[in-house]
Length: 505
Image (cartoon, rainbow, N blue to C red; front, side, top):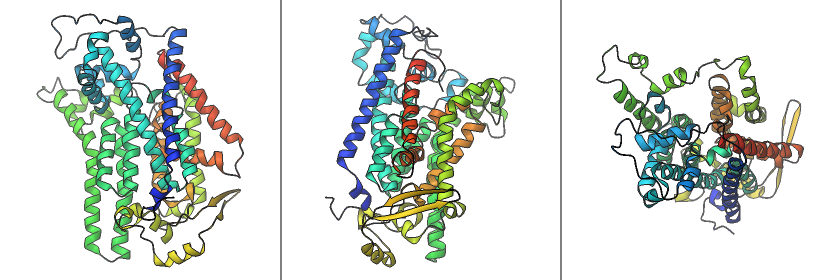
């Protein structure tokens, strides 16, 4: 039994569940490795140019490196450098040589560079420098994913206040449809680690650590800057709490300033990288030599690359020939949209008021977001006296039925001594829903829509909703079968197509 001195979120953590999540994460990575090796053995890659490695433009080597002592192993590793992996490995090896390479943010290449020059440096003689870079990328992605799964479970417990639902959602995350990208030399694993980990620290009231982790997520992927919205949401509610409930105007002003600074800190890595690109490409060039984006009022390199080289833009992908890609992305988009609709129908007053009409009890249970109550970590549970007696009277099992037009869903609510648990319908889910809504709109209307499978794969609320579909008594069991069938099919399809250089999301 958990110690009473621990905060409620820590009391809910289940060591056996964390072990199951760890085992699931490791098992899923081993499964992807086996499938990848199997498909590469059975099939011929569509493009066999993966081993090509021209000399670096910046500092070409005067003489070719000696051949590796284990050429077969080196070739097997290098054959996995496909699609975007080519860019990440090339950047780690040669730096940013071409304009389009600036679309790939530097965190993963930097980690690959460091690991290849330290831990795996002795292996260079055996398999060669490029294979060592690839090996470093594989290790980073797979290890980062395992830690991301652990943080995902911990975050889920804090938000859902239900270890069983958190376990179900975390196992789904371990076997998510975009799993092949979390085991390849892609930035998805690092992004998931720092975004989910950052949100865990945010919910745990470790704001400074949360800022650092979320800022690192912006160094991994461009959409990491959207995580600043969580601090924006927190700042909005805490400033309202200080100004209108506590009548402390100066405190509200300080909260607004500190919240703005935290959001800026999350933007800094991405902005710094754009400035780095401007410095390398635009400065000390004549007007005729300058690239078009250099002359823009706001010279944003990333947007120009996405538009010019990959044809991204509002409704630019809405073409009849892209219909198969829309079908490929339809399962994850449907699941995400349904999760948003379900929440909006369950808690319309919370959504329309942006959380300001949440009950005092809900705000007390999620003080990290909604109020200025001190951290549970340092001072124990801080609960409104008005609701403490009510909790003592209603400490046993409760049943709450959430109803809306044409739909009813039963949820069992268990009081764990800190707050009533609404699970996926709680007010604390709202910032995740707002974040997911923006991501879904961007994926559908702006991006190459097939990328939605991996673009949305790090969104916690998708798995929380899927877990609800699979465990809620009022839901049909076929939803669980359909979700697992979808995940398994995309894992098989992704490992088959992606590893052999065929298009997949």
